[in-house]
Image (cartoon, rainbow, N blue to C red; front, side):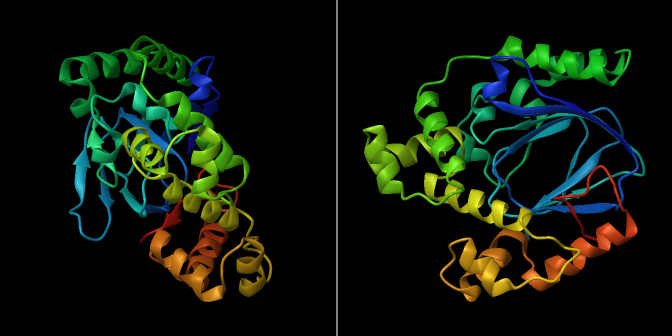
Amino acid sequence: MEYVSRAPRPPLDGLIDDLYYLEGSAPYARLLLPPSPSALLIVNLGPPFRIRAGTDLETAEYADGCVVTMPTRAIEFGYPPRTRSVGVHFKPWGPAQFLPMPAAELRDRPVTLEQVWGRPAVAELRERLAGAAGPYEMVTLLEQELMRRLRETAGLGLVRHTSGVIAATGGAVTIGDLSAAAGVSSTHLAQRFKELVGVTPKRLARTYRFTATVFSIDPAGPIDWGELAGGAGYFDQAHFGHEFRAFTGLTPTRYLEVRRRFLREHPGHVLDGWPLPAD
């Protein structure tokens, strides 16, 4: 599987972690993507893929691509035998400047790219991307499209700064301290976050803490779950286990089994690190 990625140029670097190109056969027909403090935009150039965002939702097919604001639950991606796409990994607040609706309306409910930018615009973009000379040119074309669509968004500075504090502390900060430092009420801060990120500051802090904790796990070695939970600031191991199930649908021990399966069956794969086999 080919994966090409690069950081965006200013001012998109304040909204986006990276732009990427992906082509080839996925390691598994279905991959589970646990929530993380990021959002996603995919322009699909291959056969349709499928997404299931939560156990209470039906699996939906996406032909042109999709937008996923910061999720609160694991998302299942179903891939065709060969997939090809160009995409963006946004910072949590990143999509807000490109969406015609509040981010909260898309929480755990991915939408097609056509629903965001309209069919003619998306068809034209996909045609230009498909005709590009190679992955780097395709990534640059998508970057140019985002630059063209960049717009002012009220409240973004507040959300961006506060999110930066949450990220810097790994989620170990109280919302009262955040709102006091920003000079706004907790209610106002929560409202802005829902509009531009899709979740409250408290939920974002939980996601940062959970993600940092999971990334600290070495799946190849022994793990003391109690020590890990305590070091991450969880009340106890039971609290940590509850968070694990809420975020991934898996127990910590089951997560480790699935993670080790990926490492065993596809060592060194470009997608290794966060997605999990759902087959």
